Image (cartoon, rainbow, N blue to C red; front, side, top):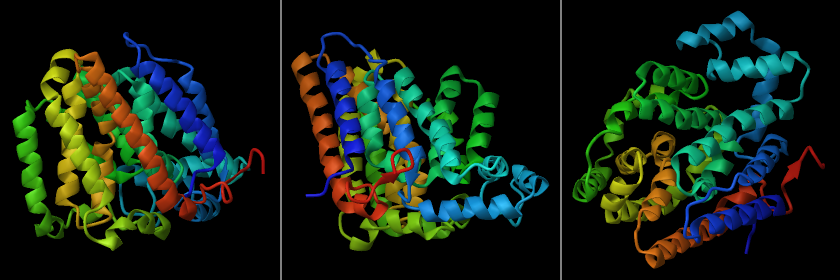
Length: 374
């Protein structure tokens, strides 16, 4: 049985300990000490050595654009014009600055990890009753595939999480500015713009189930084949590692693991919607974003690129919606049972990720290395 490298395993155990303390008390309490685990994970991601789906490609890109790109050429991309630089301009600009300062790639990677991971856990603390549980639900697999893998999308996702604050405040211009910055790291973030209005749609349990079933029924039609504009939003990744990484389960056919995840999310959203809407402020925002992610996934299910990249930017909000749904359950025994179920799911996902993907991404005990101690 495969496991993750001890630094990740211990981090998960510490975060699970904080999660247990959050979820099994009679009163709600968040533990600021969980930030120490987050800081450790930033170090493990930022200073990793040859680990992650596209690590080699990103180091090559860092050297290539550092040597060949000019600042005026990079800034042309700020208006999303077609240029000789195939990667989003703000990501290249930051890399160029680090390169010109004579810093190796892992210093740049460390900075990217900071601006990618901190906004997410900050958002969990602001919007989730159980932030440690939210992080654990997010961590598998997004921490490894985004924050410590396809790092452009990791930063973009962090900014999308921050934009939720402006959605709650109904401040459209700041929201659009944050989304623009997010698109400057990964342009697939443009698909999140409708979220500003969609979060306020008045779903109930029946309508949630209905719209998800409709999208499941549409899945075999492969409607994405008729949506040519999607290629400009989520193009085929120029680095093959990430594309191969997310396509693994698609090549196997049949019922995919993400199918089962979406069914699990649907169960919680449908069963505990009324209680959560009544008790948890802004619960419906995280719920609606999760519903959008589930629907996009089933419509795009036949495409490993679209069903991952366009889905994840919405579906990650399940890490907020599910813990809040559990927190709203009035019966203490039932709430603890559901909480235990989600923790058990995290443990299960740990082993699924370790078995299916960790070896390929060099996150196993025998393959993971870090510049801090290597």
